Amino acid sequence: MRYLTSGESHGPQLTTIIEGLPAGMPLLDSDINEELARRQKGYGRGRRMQIEKDTVQITGGIRHGYTLGSPVALVVENNDWKHWTKIMGQEPLNPEDEAEVKRKISRPRPGHADLNGALKYGHRDMRNVLERSSARETTVRVAAGAVAKKLLSELGIQVAAHVIEIGGVASSVKEYSSLEELKEITEESPVRCLDPDAGQKMMEAIDTAKENGDSIGGVVEVIVEGMPPGVGSYVHYDRKLDSKLAGAMVSINAFKGVEFGIGFEAARKPGSEVHDEIVWDPERGYYRKTNRLGGFEGGMSTGMPIVVRGVMKPIPTLYKPLQSVDIETKEPFSASIERSDSCAVPAAAVVAENVIAWELAAALVDQFYSDRFETLKATVEEQRKFAREF
Ligand SMILES: Cc1cc2nc3c(=O)[nH]c(=O)nc-3n(C[C@H](O)[C@H](O)[C@H](O)COP(=O)(O)O)c2cc1C
Image (cartoon, rainbow, N blue to C red):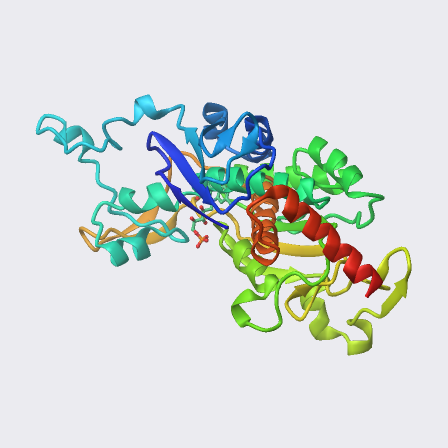
């Protein structure tokens, strides 16, 4: 299963085409719109979130609420397109428009793709880079992830994400009785945090960063329950499922690190305090007494909850200017901007949840492939039973 995305931040629309979904899986546009709305929420986001109000159009691959087996095409229109038709139009410019549109971007912003992208493609107008490198593209990654989440939920697999740190303020609530409870609490929190006190302090930290013309990052955690054991591979490096999740996490704009379970703590502990002891009972089959490794051994799922965290750097566009160089004049200048989010960690948690969901769904479809969704469902159930009784 794979997907590509296309579209620029201020272009007419974003598009994704998903290939490889089995036929007969239920899917409604509301399944996707719910996730798109979640991505747009969050304390610390700028004006664009009010303009956007993203909704999906399903333009292929679905009939009467079910997948057909053909590619599923999803489109999210840019509601602000009317203001960008000249700057982002596909037609060659008319001579009379040239002056208006000649506002070339020649000043790369530190921390963005601007300069490297210009050097790669030879773009002297760095709008050609930033329009695509913008995190606006995560809208359709979330749309594809929403389809994956639907597939997972039909197979009894739940995915949730929450924010555990922003700008140095860490959540001290580590316990929750169920993923349902975690979802309910974090959905009500403007920063998607389980700990209301820490959540308040996170919002204060965001306000302070904003007042100072600065930005702050944080840490998000994605938890998955219900994944059958043995998905992924120890046989081939490129089929290890934990490595795919790590790649997916770091593929999100501004994500710089990833860890599973106790993560980097493992470097500071003896093996006896890192590895999870194996036990068996007839109800559950094999399971681990603890889950310090976060649901993976040998590149495969253990059947324990998958716990994966990602680190988001502070947003690079700052009101407080950083030094850069104009590529036309080679003169130094201070990069400043008109508008930007000061913290996008809560929204990024939703993106993380969805890109992780995608990798898990793709791994299941890869390993238990069937053209028919009913068969996929039965095979996954069979794997669970097999593992319990093995
Ligand atoms: C949900 C989300 C929203 C973002 N919003 C902004 C933003 O408003 N301004 C900005 O400068 N960067 C924003 N970013 C981060 C940049 O897109 C990212 O840092 C940039 O593309 C460079 O990529 P890199 O940081 O992965 O190297 C956002 C990232 C995410 C995940």
